[in-house]
Amino acid sequence: MRLPSLQPVYLTLLLAGTALALGANALEMSALSNAGILVVFVAMAIYGLDMIVQRRAEVAAPGSEDVDPSFHVFRGAGAVAWGVAFVTFGVGIAASIYVAMAGWSQAGSFLAAHDGIFVIGAGVLLTSWGIGGASRATFRRGDTQAPARRLGVRLVAGGVIVPAGVLMLAWGVVMTLMPSLEDKISTGVRDAASRLIEWIML
Image 1: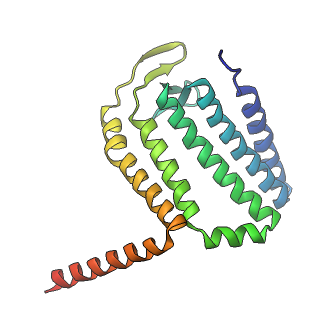
Image 2: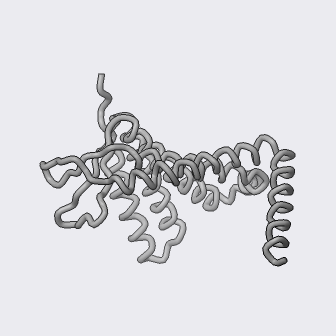
Image 3: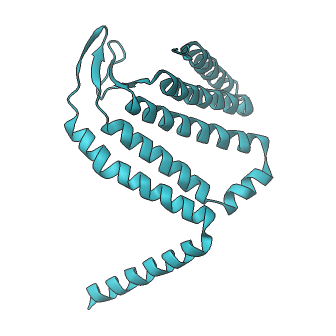
């Protein structure tokens, strides 16, 4: 059973948030402007959720024009990966804006003391972006679709971005759950870097 698309929801939020942000900014009402920006990023997260639910993602192709836009269309696991990237980014920014707007000092103090959470989020974002970028896609312009030629992008995404994201994710987990191990690793890396610099300078 195919679930209904969330497109009406995220498009409505996107338009409403954009209008609120621009209107409030023109009236110099910073709180309402920030609220509008928050709504825009919530819409982005719902857009990503729709990609996951529908297992289909359309991402603007490089060089796409406003008048005649073109897209790379991803399906299956690639679409889910893109959806995770959009959800992670949208939720992360929206949550940060909300904490700042609400003056939620306890949440701010908690996040400052557990900065590994940010590293985990960045790792998830980078990994999912890499997996999505490394996936096969078709090129769509209007009603016309054709296989997309993205070999170079796929190689970079799979060979560089995904490993970097996995390492960042793992480091964030270590920072959050095993701070003593983080200290040992950091100390070892600094010592190794110092010895390398000394050897180079000799």
